Length: 188
Image 1 (cartoon, helix red, strand yellow):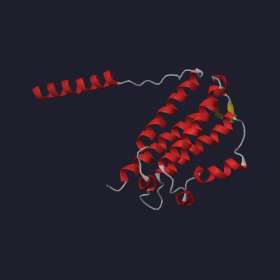
Image 2 (cartoon, one colour; image 1 turned 120 degrees about the vertical axis):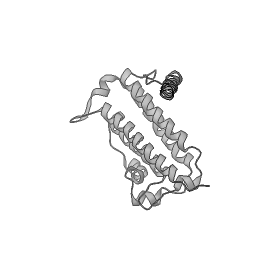
Image 3 (cartoon, helix red, strand yellow; image 1 turned 90 degrees about the vertical axis):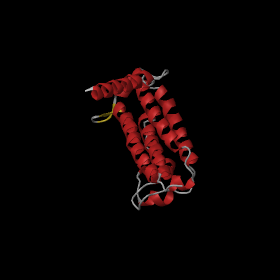
Image 4 (cartoon, rainbow, N blue to C red; image 1 turned 180 degrees about the vertical axis):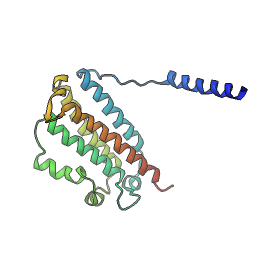
């Protein structure tokens, strides 16, 4: 019985300490409407965590694929930037990709054999800087929108809020894949 009390007390203290140390809340980012500001906070949090996980990778780690169906971390980050760039022009600019956009982003927009071959040989900084550029344009565009726009449908049953939620969940999904690839990196 004494052991259980000590264990319970220790568990309770750990839980309370973790709450006391929690320093993050999802809040609307200043300069944006409330709902968009909340989405921006979440998008930036995910991007920051992915950047933190990957920014120190060397070339071999950036290009590493653990089997012939896997994607490299560089390709996954390029894919995240491509996805965001696609929804950015669709929702913020009200247009489809131009021929130039399509030519640049096509290899990363749908991952597969072609992207596994093409998205090699560039440092992690290349992919992260590209994503930074795309995100900066996204943030500038979202700053000009309001919550009424966020609720507007872009297609039947799909509104702008859902589109940007999809960009966020897409990042979270690929963050898991990036962590998996990183865990499979050959030990140095």
